[in-house]
Image: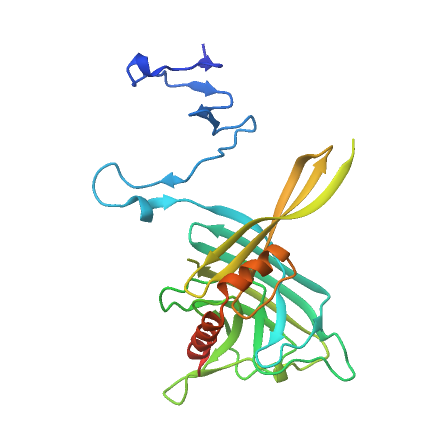
Length: 208
Length: 82
């Protein structure tokens, strides 16, 4: 006998509360308190989280509880910080994965070009990538950094990164400067070097 | 057997110190009215921004007061200052 198969078995409270089961037990559509938590596709569902806190020792439910997972898409938007402008794209893709209080996003904006050429609908100010799926955590000073791919921009040096400040829902492109001469600079709308440009970003950030 | 597709706003959250409104849309494929596939699309409405969704507009009116918008703008300015 490979295992014990339980179908539609209800263990009553009167049985003493502790039930010993053999090493191999197969459940079909497991319910707890009337709610199905394992469905027929062997997927866990309708749970409030996975608590990794040890049964003894350190650890609190809030810091050890994995209480959220979600994946999906969003629509990134290229804009200027002073004047947003309007743009067309060949591709405009955003994907996110949220695990607990951390979100990872991947952004692809290809063939960015003003939607109107005469007069140009180009924005002004610094480059901002808006449309994020979640706002970044706002309760403390946290700066979230990620990588960036830039094509057909006038760049100063080669070290750029994507930056998402706390309590915000858009990304800027930052270039640090060495020494004590300055904090750095942001990529500007006027840095675009071609009719069309490309930006790719991968960044991970905390949320409230 | 009729296949249809619909987008519904299935979750709206107000988060953080500046009342960012996080909106989740469920893109659903239905067969005879039953969901057979679903994926999510999200966006955030920051103080001072707008939305085309009537429900979100009502929430914007309630939580994005002039004081909140001013505080958020001040916060952004301080954060991004070089």
